[in-house]
Image 1 (cartoon, rainbow, N blue to C red):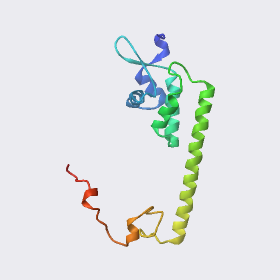
Image 2 (image 1 turned 120 degrees about the horizontal axis):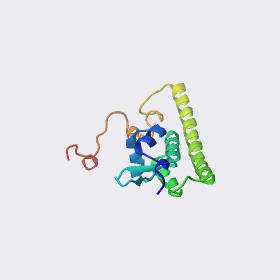
Image 3 (image 1 turned 135 degrees about the vertical axis):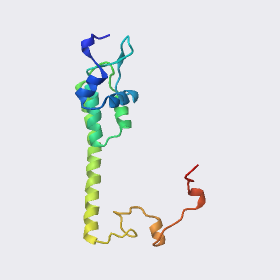
Image 4 (image 1 turned 120 degrees about the vertical axis):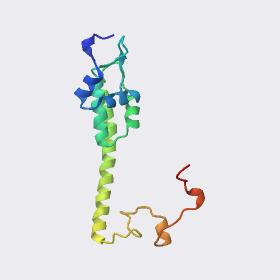
Amino acid sequence: MKAPTDLLTVGEVARRAGIATSAVRFYEDRGLITSERTAGNQRRYRRHVLRRISLILVAKRMGIPLSEVTEVFAALPDDRMPAKRDWERISRRWAGHLQARRREIEELEREITGCIGCGCLSLQRCRVLNPADELGEQGTGPRRLPQRDQQRPFD
């Protein structure tokens, strides 16, 4: 076991990472970070978890789901700081996500420009306000789903 000065409490990790202690516990519950237990059953974290938490926060800002972060972290060592090549591999993988998001945003910009240009704002015809509206093809007005497809609210 490491010397006590090499380990951080939940509160220290949270304070240094700028997150709530509940988030630290949540990340541990999800298997994204690990802790050791003291004789008094208190959690202690190695300092490298701060890097992992930083990467989690970056992924969150990029819109990368925690399920993918979990997948990426599964290939990282738990007992030490990941190497530079580990971070480079993650960076390359997530660069693809950023490029895909950039393309989606550019498509949205083209759609909204077209929408503003056309001025229709029609729920019946507008792809931007009402994408993939299959019922709209049947005409205007409300539609009632068949009974078998409805969920009963109090069951």
